[in-house]
Image 1 (cartoon, rainbow, N blue to C red):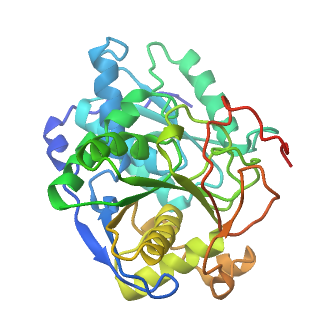
Image 2 (cartoon, rainbow, N blue to C red; image 1 turned 90 degrees about the vertical axis):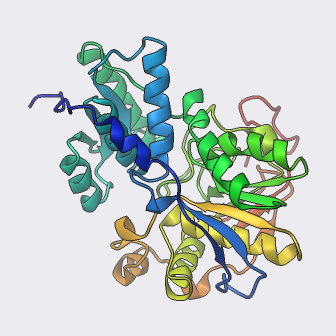
Length: 362
């Protein structure tokens, strides 16, 4: 089997489709009443939210001479960045080879291939780091096998972050004021990319990060996760740890409950990241009456019809929306005892730089 993908003819006119997504007011009970928050519907963008980052990373590499015209792009994906890279590859004329895993939804596999991507799937998680590390190991192998191939390294590439300057500008253009920003965190790109410009406009702006239970990003122990699209088994260097005022870890039951409530009460909804961010944004609006709260819905609901919106899936995984937590449990530091539901902590540090908490890791 050939490893290369078909080289597309560059379609720079596609770049006019980037961004420009709607900003809507959400007042649906999540899970109870709240004053409402603003949501940027990035799932309605061509290529999704991460098309912004994908285009930025490829243009940055081209400007530095790291990505010759027509060279192959190789990257790992759990789905969302893959769609963004498929968009960027078509717009800029680069074949794209992606490494997913066997938990990648069939609908996303079909969509990526329809867009001309060469997709490889790893079939077993790494002993340490799970699917994420297994995918990255294969990316390194492919990069060595394909002459001139370029690996964007989304987790550590500053151009990922830079790609979201346009998102920040769109929020500034639409909002008169902003007190609290809620961002899901995976690679750390969009939270780091928009908080700088937004704080220059509103210096007192608070940033709340939303992570997944079982994620290692903010110093918790990595565990197998049902949710995809947020959280990580590694520590991405794009995460702007010093910018966060607090972090919430949200479980899959809470995300499912929020997604379904959004779909029923607001029509706009999405997947794991959207459900988790929405729940925390509603909480922030509820505990800070009068504050203007905004968040980003990274994607729409369609790829999650067999998971988040499927009763058989949620029952098989023990995810009962009716039993989802209605408020977060505050923990004193990220290394506090393991829990599986919704938690929050206002002590945020880089786990690779800060000394361990005196009480130690669990």
